[in-house]
Image (cartoon, rainbow, N blue to C red; front, side, top):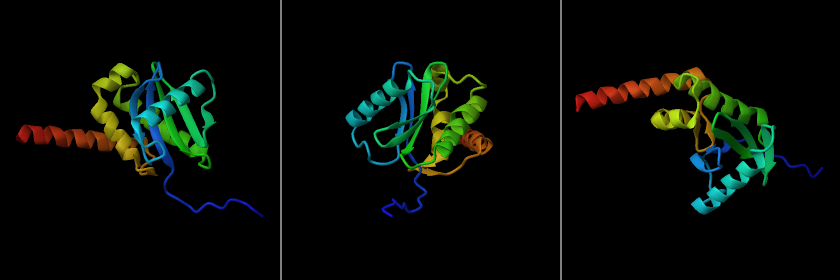
Amino acid sequence: MDELILDPSFYTVKAILTLDNGGDRFFAKYCDDSYPGVKEQKAFEKNTFNKTCQTDTETALLGGLTVVCKSSIDLYFYTIGSSYENEMMLMAILNCLFFDSLSQMLRKNVEKRALLENMEGFFLVVDEIVDWGVILESNPQQWVQRVLQSAKEQIKWSLLR
C-alpha cells in the first residue's frame, strides 16, 4: 500500500517550447523553476530535440517529464508536463494551440517565417493558453477571438497617440 497519492493541482504544464529544425530555440516559456538558467534550459531543449526528432511518436518520457511533440514544416512544437500528467491533456493543448489557433491566424501556413512575421499574435496565443502552468482556455476559437480583440485595441490606441 505504498502508492503515491498526488494532490490535485491546476499546474499541468511545465513548459511550452518551439524549436527550429536544427534544435535551436525559437520560443520557450518555462512555467516553473525546473530549469532555472538559460544554460540548463538550452541543454534540456537540445536533449529533447535529439530524443524526439528522429522518432515518429508524439509522446516521450524524458528525465521524469512527459514530452508531447508535433512538427510542422520547419518547426517542432512541444508541451511538457510532469511524468504523472495526462498525455491526452498535453496533446490537446498542443493541438489546439499550435495546429488550430495558429493555423487560423496564419491561414494554414504554420512555418518559421510566418511565425516571425506574426510573433505578437503567437505570444498572445501562448499567454492565453497557459499562465504559470495553469491551463486557462482549451477552445481555439476563444484564443483567436482574444488575439483579434487585442490587436484591434492596439490599433485603436496607436491611432489615438
